[in-house]
Image (cartoon, rainbow, N blue to C red; front, side, top):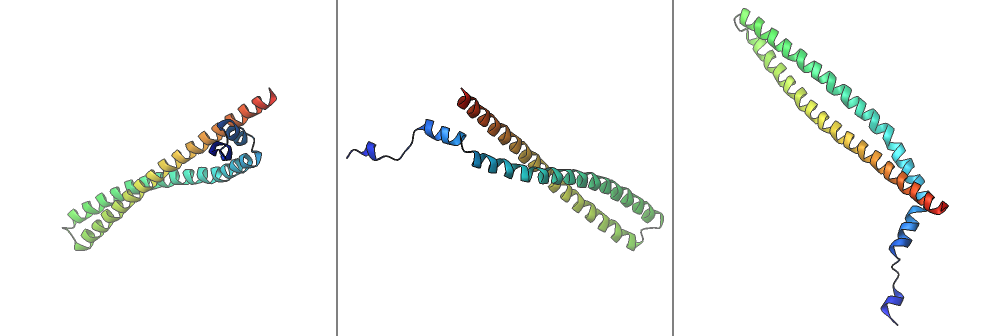
Amino acid sequence: MDKDSDSTVTSLDENTENFCTNPTRDILAEGITNLFKPTIEKLDERVASTIQLQTELRGQLAALAAQLRDIEKAQHQIPEFADKVKELLNVKHKVTIISNVLSTSQERLTGLHKLIEKEQRRRQALLDSALSTNIS
């Protein structure tokens, strides 16, 4: 028997047709996308809010550190304040690091959100073209 006659490979047209006419898969994909979209949007909003609050906190910590340095100079460098200033600087550094991590996370979430929207548009275009082909 000839190898070509035993082949189970289908043509590209058949795969494309099956891909376009699988409503269950499309409904599942859309449902999963719609399931994650609100969560990603809420997370994105919360990250943005946290970044804003951390920026404000960083400014307040800087102002407080400056005030403590002024007090320290006025009282001839009391050792207690020197330690507190160091602690505040360490906290400020940690806030900066966390802010950078959150910014990176927000950028990734924004990218993910864009990919979800792109996939939705692609699926809708594919569905529209399949429907228009079936109608014609």
